[in-house]
Length: 239
Length: 267
Image 1 (cartoon, each protein chain N blue to C red):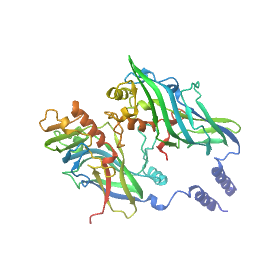
Image 2 (cartoon, helix red, strand yellow; image 1 turned 120 degrees about the vertical axis):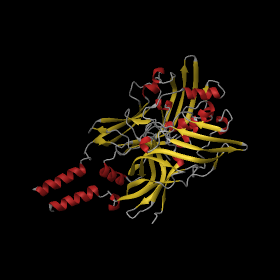
Image 3 (cartoon, chains in turn yellow, cyan; image 1 turned 60 degrees about the horizontal axis):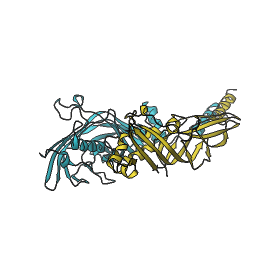
């Protein structure tokens, strides 16, 4: 009797993650209000307001519930979505709770403008720093015959962080605007102007070689990816 | 099948991937201040810099492995440690599983105190790749005199910078954010039960991988605005001296200029 119960217990423990049913997991990408509507001045510590006319992320290798889900090569996140995000793809997966999902952000392209009182700056930047986000902190619960969503959330406000390591960084735009002031002052903040500007009091943490604002912004792009809102992921440079 | 055999089978199936017994071996290794990383350097701006003082307040030296999750899990089980993880978020970007430590506060003095022991670290057997520590503001609790110039600051670097006929004697008092961690200093060592190496914490005036120096970007001549050949770089500096201070403070907080070097034991 005891042996039979123990055997059943062992079997149950070994198989508990393997439900018999199937459901659908849908993958979306969402830039939240900060990308769809802009980052208001009262959210930025030095009073600049930032809006994006284009915020495109190139994605690949999206894995959820053990499945690799086919997604479009890139997605435009400024398109209003009423909070739902942009649909990317779906797959049939086993029912149950799934974690450790992940994805790769291959490239980030941002265009927009920032204003402070009568001052205005525009920008159009492409960051090609492929980043693998994995073991993301979320659980995707797929019901038998039902649907669940795995949302890739992009935090645009990180591009304004004054620190790569502080728990509570400030959001600033003034230093980026200053790169154009020190450059040709034509109202367009270029990659070259950012690359020529020292990061000053911005804080790159332990990483060496991040001395100019372009390198700094590129490093910040490796922190944009999240899941289901605020879920964090492990992040590392992707091949 | 008997109950005992069933349990054994279950443990074998469920825990079979958990590694060899060596992973649980704890090894004690002495950590000391190693001055071999300091040498006169010529910076990108052409200054030849020689140090005559290099002191740093630090705490909680941690040693990390990569790709050895089982070792890290054992460490957590043994110590109850809250191991930092790598997250896509500021404050959590660096990877590495902590499986060794030397807890406490220390003042490392790479010139007058070279060779001094900081303490004895405990590490689990494993393949180590990096070390972390926390910058701390040194003070009386660390054995400093009240009037020690390092008191209240994290680091004191002093020396002479020379370029052509220009010579500047400088003192830099570096402050760091509270609880600022230095993550990812190279520490390459396979620690086994029989390991007896001593671990030398080094400050590197030149990054051995990329060749940049601790003082790159610091324009000593420009910072010495009164031209008296004496320069104090501190958080209170202004003008060109503030620019120089910011650059030096930033560089000092990178993992490019520290490592932990195993050296053979001394019998």
